Image 1 (cartoon, helix red, strand yellow):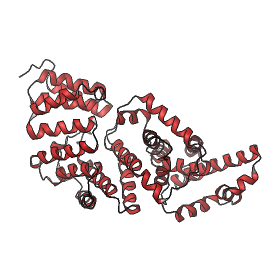
Image 2 (image 1 turned 90 degrees about the horizontal axis):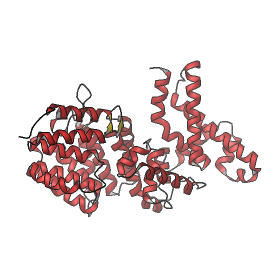
Image 3 (image 1 turned 30 degrees about the vertical axis):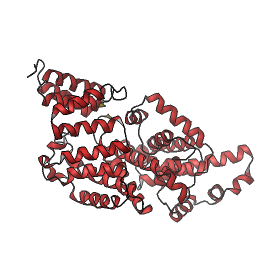
Image 4 (image 1 turned 120 degrees about the horizontal axis):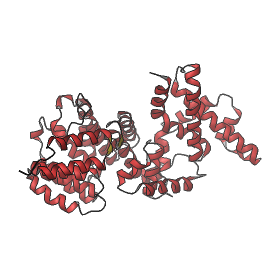
Length: 424
């Protein structure tokens, strides 16, 4: 692997932690991002020339902390506030102790939540921010998602998401970046769960780029969900989210064929599914279902479990899945849930039943630019024998999709129906 490729790989994995460490020191997210990017630039300049360090992640972390320390010193010098700086234990210790990296590591290990990324997710989900601002900021800074990807996830314009992120950063400027107490942590939990869920989704089906899967994001989300289970073992929805992610992750080995093309769920080789992850997911689902009323993640996990328990695609209990989607829609009445329910209805009751629902959903402005609506329409039209319309719908889905792999697959599907196919 070339130095540049190694730097890109390590940066993708460590970016969020670098920002988290700098933010704790500086209490400013923009400056924290700058410190992390400074470390990246220095790596790009020095590693090809001097050689790759033995521990690239630690090198980036140390360099980022050094940049943050430099900024703290400049603040003190320019503002002449040495006494205020000394009153801040963390700033004083990093200012006075030469081996500040070891000092900060010791402090981190002594905290209740030792993981820097999980800590910063709780901090970024500050109650002073509106929910959409909490989630957008955390996904951008910590999930590594681009603004356009976040916009697609929420079916809103990209400019809207950008404004939310800017406002959130302004509102958090100067805040003490410390872990909230247990009571306030519980109040922030739903936003934290949403962030972890969306990080996983970004890895499970990349909204843009040249690859469909980003396994590192899935692994990170799984790790965070498992940490949340340990931190909050009495929270049923934490286990529900963990169950959903474990079961979804179990299918990753079967999602692409040998040529890297997507394989739809009914066509996947279920022998490739990770049985250990399925067992973990089903165990977490059992813990989640001990609660009085299941939440949205638990219901989604129950839907995923129907697929996991079916030895063959034709054994799937689609009628039970439709019932679970009905329950989920009560908790989460979103157009995306309605679309997924329509797809399940098509499997349980036939394509004509699904087409009626899809026509109604097509009138929703939020879904009109959504590629998966056009994809669902294409599949149903193809099953109904309306091949010319199906081909047009596949092409429309490809135009709306920003992922190169999905685009190629959708266009191939359209081409397979023939350029002049007529309705049957």
